[in-house]
Image 1 (spheres, rainbow, N blue to C red):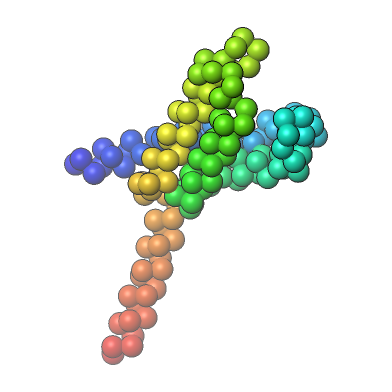
Image 2 (spheres, rainbow, N blue to C red):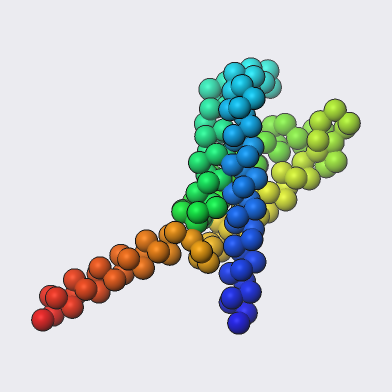
Length: 147
């Protein structure tokens, strides 16, 4: 019973984290990725990284919602949050400075991503369906070899 509660709780974290990152990536493209490229340049990061960040956010967010590669995707998203916090948000403080939000949301997203990277998330995850299918194929193949 405890395991079911753990998996259900982890599912909630995984889906909310996935939706949040998907929307953030989508907004970067919809709002004009060129603006984000320019902003990256203005803070001393190579502008082309904006495409990578937005893509990882969108595709990674969708993958989390679906439960595909949750540990790896969460690890990548955690790295993005560390980079965003250190490079941009740390200097404005935990709650921000009135002009820019602080790093409180970044820290929460980082904690969620690290939790999923460490623990994984199996409930309603496509990874589980794929691995079950592979196990069944392996078992069927092993049985046919033994006959």
